[in-house]
Length: 274
Length: 274
Image 1 (cartoon, chains in turn green, yellow):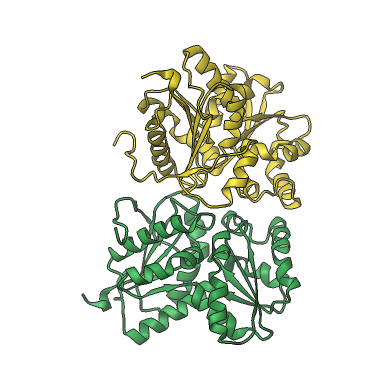
Image 2: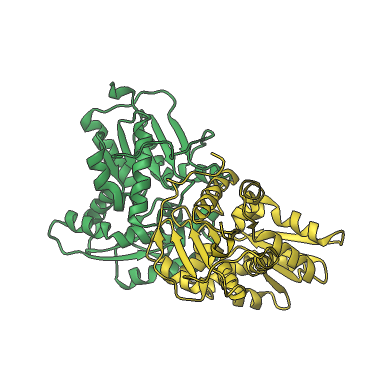
């Protein structure tokens, strides 16, 4: 097996992970990527850890069957609940979005007050708290977490600066403002599209983009391990459902045009470990 | 096989169909019900017709394995795209939510101007237009349809009368107000929870609850066919995912306490016709 010919595999519950892939394609311009969006079962953020773990294992299995040299879990929910298990089950390196963002947040905060926003499942897992405290390495940090379940559907509607989105954001962000955070982790790959609004509502606060942080971690791992993909077709996109509204939104997330995605079923794929 | 011992099977993408089941339990107090909510893959409304059809067939197959005497598709999206196929494939009567609501809307409208709100998939299917025109039986009707994709997540957040919900509802309803509709079909089983808000924003407009209409159709079919369920445990609920937020919301939809649902996998079930 020649690592130089292998693409990097990236998966997400849907198209949100394309916002992370965008950074990966920027920082690793000589790499090839295979992206899987589980659009037939999107979203993951309102589902249980057991179900998300099952789905994540199926996604990883699908990517491995495409001979990837690394798997990036570009979904905060799946990273929160399934990363440890995937890391043990998969023989290639696995990079999640939570640890890199937690490290960045612990690094950039000045007053030690860090806010985390994400889906109900991500926030409920407590994964960010654990990771931030670990990276703070004994420094005193105060973490305020807030589930923002309406942000994903609002972003998917394209209502990025709609008055309703602002009204909802003001309500979600109030506890973080009250806590005086100077750093806010966008713990969902949909949220970077809300950056202009969030920056306006949280002036002076550093926004940490989990997908961007993961892209840098994946890049450094590629370099240090000398894992290289070949330079053929740069991006292949697979989705598990082909609803027409995904295509235009995918291009907003990725910041590039997307070739027609292939629609695949994960049911026929052997789940890892079974 | 003794029909009198068989329950009525009801399925939905999630817990929204409980708002239809509520009416069924009211109008058929001597019936037993098996409810399946496909919470592991909720929602259906943003997915393609192919995917929703696959899921609907798996749900119907699961209910048939529980020996139901009738299947009520308490999901507008699944009714819109999969009802004809299910009706052909299944040997028990199949009742959807669209035809009963279309019949009611065509019956109650005075000015012939009917509004329909639903998910993107339901509205995109055009199923309500076809059914309403058929039930209008030559009378002139003007139908204005509006997808309202944010209503489901807002209802699931419990933001039934939140200022953001009102702001979003005003935007969604404007074309229906402009069209002068006197009848509004709530073409999604989540929407009945928004009735107080919708009634306030659409004064004088008759709201047609698709789940309530389907309950009456199912009831009349049971009587006319002399199909009867036994009088054991009244309701058994199965979900495909057990996320903790579903339970309290389920009781709001059903208007009754719900026994702990059993969590099941549909993957092991043979899909109809395969």
